[in-house]
View 1 (cartoon, rainbow, N blue to C red):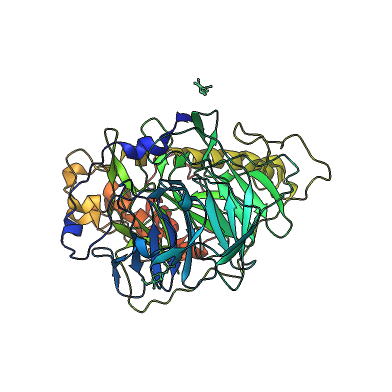
View 2: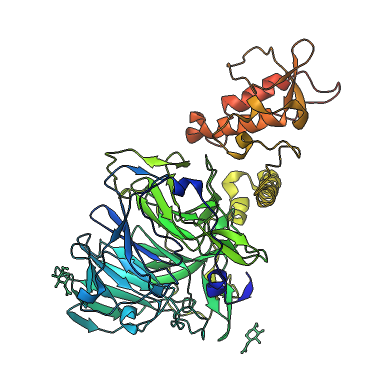
Length: 571
Ligand SMILES: *[C@@H]1O[C@H](CO)[C@@H](O)[C@H](O)[C@H]1NC(C)=O
Ligand SMILES: *[C@@H]1O[C@H](CO)[C@@H](O)[C@H](O)[C@H]1NC(C)=O
């Protein structure tokens, strides 16, 4: 966790650097530019983008038409002709707000965050048929105070929209006094979508109130809201990034909330990322963001939080995507669509990222198009597992048993590693020690890999300096072994190329021949082997006890090659 002076505007206010993009230049369709901290909502197979521009005069509504051919080289952007003079509500540029479609019809609610006009700071209805705004006719209940960097989550099961947290708005385009909210509001809609009932939820949180966050993400999974990341306010001028080592869970049906430690490969803190519910019905997909380190680099990480156990995994992705931050994402069936935001900084100046990217979350591949006629299915309603909400203490506690500086109500995660070590049926200490060693090795590997990836934004570390080619830059899509000059490669080990029981998988096409059956396995071979491993069908059904044929093959090729007296350390 890090303490920082307000990043919110400093990351985008500096004059923007717009790098020329040959891809966009070839596309004649007009598209929006320089949008950050905008909000997304869909209606009638169109994905609408509201706000997010710092330009005082630019607050048109744009949409991506998801019904037609969708190719990222020329995304189907359309500018909705927003005739603001014909609207009964006075609108204005706005940032850090929310947009949501409560009943999946023609009306999208927009609630601006930091805005020039305060009318934007209460929910107003945008008609996707008429392209204008109206004020909801009846607004009863407990009105919500104006706020920014909150979240709005549509809950069609309960016919509600949940508004979580946020901070008081700053003057548009400026930093301001940080005043945060730890409340949850529900917006209830009737058949007449222009009628809205707001209520502040009175939450049962026996370990203490949830932290007052802003700039976080809240994702609905199986009737629970999972809130992660964002900031807390330290004082009126300083905010602190909340790391990913805990998640706040609000159980809608019991109206109870807890914060619990996460486990697994816990990612470093980041802000301005996107989070969406996976189609599997139990995971959250986190993409991009600005790393909370001193560099503030923009990442292209795809992280998966399994809500069943609150376990983090960094997802291996095929294909390449630029880093992206201050964006949003939207699930169109299995396709995660994201657009706009920033891709990095030149010095302190952010680089706007005006393109659209699509991640296939089944094959975990960045793709350039969605097949025409694709009909998206929703999130699974019968997920393979769900979060085990812990029994709550009858009496309120002062804090959780694993408090964090940003949230003292955090409790330990029963699925965390230390539990596995003490489970008697796993064989006690005899198993626990190797498990611990493996855990350390796995941890070290992830640490190493993360470090290497951080270092390798431009240079794949497997290649020696000077080896860069357009092939080797396109991670996952090329055959790096084929075209790489051997002088830039390096050997890892030798192996026997004539092994019995070889199942036909050649460890590497670019393998250098030596005398007899001996061959040198090189870094290039290994890179290719890893890529094939990711795509191996066996991998999806693999269980931890059974080695894959791919791994057996490596062992059989190495067999007999070790130095005399060496025992093969394998059972
Ligand atoms: C919205 O726009 C339509 C067509 O432009 C117009 O007929 C209608 O009166 C507008 N509604 C409001 C509330 O301004
Ligand atoms: C706010 O907190 C920061 C960090 O702890 C500190 O440097 C700063 O002086 C504080 N500002 C005020 C107004 O208290």
